[in-house]
Image (cartoon, rainbow, N blue to C red):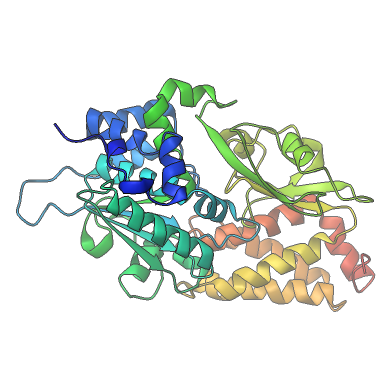
Length: 416
């Protein structure tokens, strides 16, 4: 009989981080996974209702189930797991928080996921600027290997090259292979043909950090943590003109108003006008809808996306045109240039917004912005980058059109 994982601690207990993690139940989820078998692990995660925490909200177990079973051919055994830790969404640092604070939680989660899909090799694709995360993860991987927790699994830490598109799962795979980080055609999806043409699952950091708890405590316990139909908790955030910017773990489905209240409300002398619910590439939701539950379906019903669950607040003393310009400048710089609508359309939007802010804009610029928002809609570009970039712009044009018009009439911004 195999020796229990939690009995494999090195003499002296290893580092404080590993000892503390094991003492709080660390690696018991991995032990439970190996005891029940890969198929049952997938079933437990399905029952738990875990949806991806990277932005898309795709059911985790459904993504795993798309990996084809080995055919039995000699060259058909390799499977890969890739951890997407390339956190570059403006207003978002939840994965950094998890990796710096508890790296073993991620290592255990990726080991569970790799076991569930039959992967023998795992890559953690980490944003290069996250230097402390790199140190913590490198140490944690070494400790887990020394303690025997990762038997049969190779784990590699891969530092990214620094572009936003590396966070798109197929662009990320190209980057690991040493290629230009541009999206791939889909289908085939990575679960069928991913890293070096082999079946590959790409999971977000926060998604994987949920797995040890699901496997240790069970899917019913996990579902009961949530206030929504989907299971678990969520790392939420609040930034911009709030009193206490930061991150907090709360039941999935906590309202936007409660999250902002826990962030101390708006800074003194400011009131909320609207908010981006899930990072820079989501639609604005007006302040009148603060009771919106921050879960996937409720935010979608409110006309936006949960995304990363990290709120960016727009206050009554900040210019929505200027805020959108700041975001569009970022997206124009980060476009990979692979498809013409994105490569040309986003910089065109940037020029129109710059003209409005400089007092040189005309009504025709607003009409061009509205047309670009329609032309760069989902399904009209090679990947979801440009539609995501248009979400704050299109919603701002809808909610704050009078501010855009005012820039033309007064030839400049009234907030200055």
